[in-house]
Every structure is written in structure tokens, then in C-alpha cells.
Image (cartoon, rainbow, N blue to C red; front, side, top):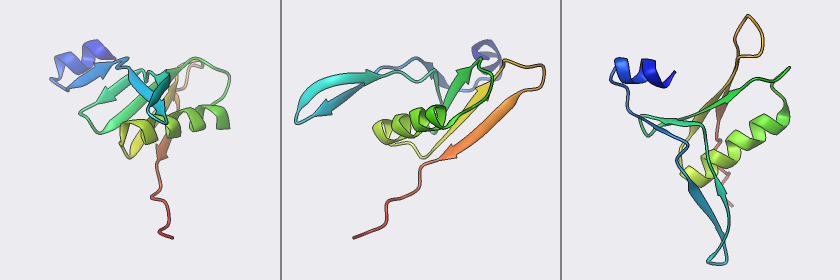
Length: 93
């Protein structure tokens, strides 16, 4: 996929590290597979089925990066399985 992005001159970052902080202390880091054009998280899987845990993972990546959309690509089976994930804006209180 990265080769094709380069061939098509699509900007991307592969496994860019995003630190996670709590009370100004670094507690973890999130590392999405790809960030495309600074607008989209792409997570690549080879699993039986895309499950809620995978969707939660993308939602966490979106919250940390400030991006609004992601896609999970599952290459386990002959037919590509994919799931678009969009971070909904929190309702104002």
C-alpha cells in the first residue's frame, strides 16, 4: 500500500508515534499503521472479522490525533473487508 501511495504521490506517514498524556505525564503511545494526507487513519488487519475492539482502537487514534475519519482494512480473506469509522462530535453540554 505504501508503494502505491508513493507511486501516486499521496502523502502518508507510516507508524507515526502519538504520545498519550494524563495529568501532564506520558502514560502510553498510540501508533496507527498509516496516516494519509493528514486527514485519514488507516489501520491494516489480518483477522477473521472486524470487531468492536478494532473500531474502538481507531476511535482512540482519532481522538489522540484530532483527525475525524479512519478506515480499517482486513486482508485475511480473498474479498477485502473494510469499515469506515468517523469520530462524532461530542454534544455540547
